[in-house]
Amino acid sequence: MKSIWVVDDDHSIRFVLEKALSREGLPVRTFSNARDLLAALEEDSPQVLVSDIRMPGGSGLDLLAKVKARLPHLPVIIMTAYSDLDSAVAAFQGGAFEYLPKPFDLPRAVELIRRAQEESQREAVADEAAAQVPEMLGQAPAMQDVFRAIGRLSQSHVTVLITGESGSGKELVARALHKHSPRAEGPFVAINTAAIPKDLLESELFGHERGAFTGAQATRRGRFEQADGGTLFLDEIGDMPLELQTRLLRVLSDGQFYRVGGHSPLRANVRVIAATHQNLESRVRQGAFREDLFHRLNVIRLRLPPLRERREDIGVLARFFLQRSATELGVETKRLSEAALAQLLAFDFPGNVRQLENICHWLSVMAPSQVVEAKDLPQELLQPAASAELTLERSEDAPASSGEASAAAAPQSGAQVLAAVPLPGAAVASEAWVMEMACEARRLLAAGEPEVWELLSRRFEASLITAALELTHGRRIEAAQKLGIGRNTITRKIQELNLDV
Image (cartoon, rainbow, N blue to C red; front, side, top):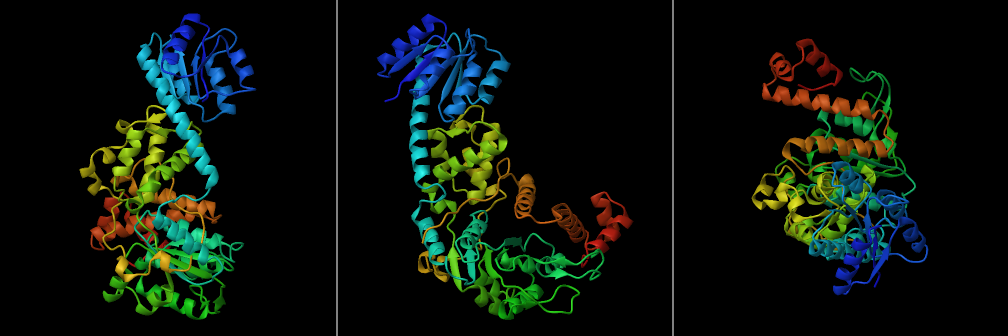
C-alpha cells in the first residue's frame, strides 16, 4: 500500500497528522519542505499528498503544479492558515483535491484524507480498465451486440439503417461503420435532414448550379458529391420531405442525380447510412414515408439501445465525458462520489448519452470541488418529477423491438463508439436549440465543411422566418414586426433563402 505524504514546515502539524493517520492504519511519510519531497518523488510516489500552502523554500501551489505535472491523477489536499479567496481559487485551479483551512478539526482532516485515498484507488482501477479498452465506451450486453454488428459489417458496402432515441449516439455508430469499412480512407459526410429547411435540403444533398435560384452565386457541390468514395450519413431520415424521398430513391437505385438547376447527370460512389428516432413502418402507414425507399434503406437495421437500458455504462461514460470536458476547458478533471454516481445510475436520462455529456460538461464548470457530491448535480437529477419536462424527451415513436431485427441478428465484431455532443450545461428547454446548433457547428468544422458561417446563418434565418410566418399564418408584415425587422428585410430574406412561403 502506498503512503500518505505530508509536507509542512510546522513540526506540530506533521506530528499530529502522522499520529492520527497511523492510528487509522494508514502508512505516512512526512517532509519539512518541498525540495525533499520532490527528491523523494524520483524513487517513489504517494497515494495522497497533504501539503501546506506556504513554506520556506517553495510554496505549496508551486509544489502542486510540479507534482501534477508528474502525477496528474494524484489527489492533493492543500492546507493553509491563510483562509482567503485567492488561495482557495488558486488551489482548485491548480488541481487540488480539496482545500483544508487551519486550524482544522483532526477527525475531519482524517476523513478527508480517507476520501482522497478512496478516490486514488478508484482512479487506479479506472485507469487500468481504460488502458484495457481505450476506445470502447459501452460494456453493457446491448452495446456489445452493437459492436459485434459493426465488426461483422466491417467488410461490407451494404446500406444500414440505425434506429434509436434522440441523443443515443447514432452518428457515432455511423462513424464507426465508416471507420471499419473498406471506405475508411474516403470522406465521411453527415447531414441532419430535419435541421435544414425543405427548400434548402435539395441543394444541400445534390448541390446547385450557378444561378439556379436567387442567392446561388456560384456552383456548389452537394453532400453526395462530397462523399464520393466514402460514406454519406443521413440523420433523421424519417423527417425528409416526400418529394426529396423520390429523388433519394432514384440515387440509391441507379447512382445518378442532378444538381439543382443542372441538366447533366452526375454519379457518386457513395455508401448511404441512414438513422432515425421514428418508427418508419408507422410513417409508411401514415403516408409520410415512401415504402419503396424504406425497403431500400432497411437492408440491415441496427437498434441502438437507450441509456436506461445499459445503466452499467453510465459510470464509464461519465468518467470519459468529465475527462474530455476538463481537457477542453483546461481544468482538472472532476470526479464523481459514490453518492453522485448512484444518483446518475437511478436517473432515466430521457436525453440519453447526449444529456449525460451535457451534464458532465456542466459539472466541469459548476461543481464547487474536485469531487462531485450528489448535492452538486443539476436539479433535474435531484427532482425526478422534473425529468418529464426536459426538452430532450424520450421519443414515443421509437421503433418497437418486435418490428425490427436486433443488432445481434445483424452481421457483427468489435468496434468503438458512443456519445455525442459536447456542450455546456444540462438539457434545459430554453437552451436546447443552442446546444443543437453548437453541436452541428462543431460537426461541420471538424469535417472541414467550407463556408460554415454562411451555411448555419442561412439555416438560422430560414428557421426564424418560417416560424414567424407559421405563427402569423403567412402575414409577412406581422411576422417582420414580431421578429423586430423591417418589411423589406423579411421580403429580401425570403427571396435570398428561396423560402417557399
